[in-house]
Length: 344
Image 1 (cartoon, rainbow, N blue to C red):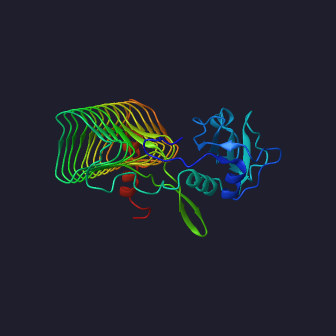
Image 2 (image 1 turned 120 degrees about the vertical axis):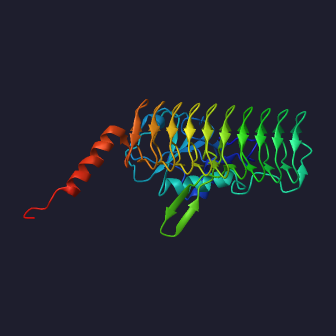
Image 3 (image 1 turned 180 degrees about the vertical axis):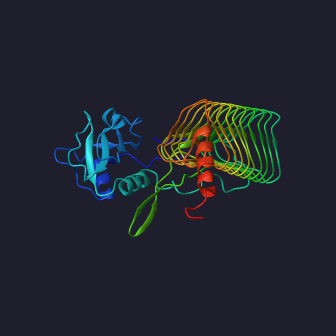
């Protein structure tokens, strides 16, 4: 469910109200007057929550959910509900969840920050904090002792920043918790909504992004780098990780400790990256990828959706593969090009 520091929940709503909003009918045998308090992920939901499942066949996350209500595809006719869960069949799970989330959080697409200049009276600013000209600090935000914030930076509602951080000018931080001794260079964008849409023949509907960004201690984030907040859970950057300029990190990505991410790397959503991983310049990582601890990916390497890269190895090429295999393939292709044609 969404963190109340950043989002205002307008619920609860009844099952009948939610069904009406998403274009579904109240399931047979279900109580339309039952109250739904919030939306949540499969793993984070409890009995008063609405969640969703996009698959055609149950997986472990679906079977183990404690959600009281779950949106499922109407095409998945043989889906068996987990104990205590009411299934709500809909024509498009993504469109239905988007509509339900907007019912609970109608302001979710607005900037989660202040619009008035200066420090909001409810913000907490520690000792020896330096604020540059034009800094804006939103309601309920917290800034730790000794932190320096450069000119024209915006700290959104509820954001917590640790001690002895250095945040350069023209940075925007929203829906985020920042650890101690974190360095963020100019123009970085932390906690903006992730790139998620429900698409159909009529166009693309923005899916509410109700999660957070967690930046652990001693992380460095380069200039004009963007780290999107999670859709429902968190985007996490582990302790001591160093991120270069112009890097894009998608929603719900988890990056481990002490990793190195070089300029122009693009990481799609829901990716898991271990500790001490190195991603060289312009590496592209698709969504739902797992990269083990200690892996090193060469420049322009491409990781395809669903790939799992074993830790402790060097990788290259598109799609990514162990670097020796990749070099052998390059050598073989080169030999074929040089091979004389028959009859010449």
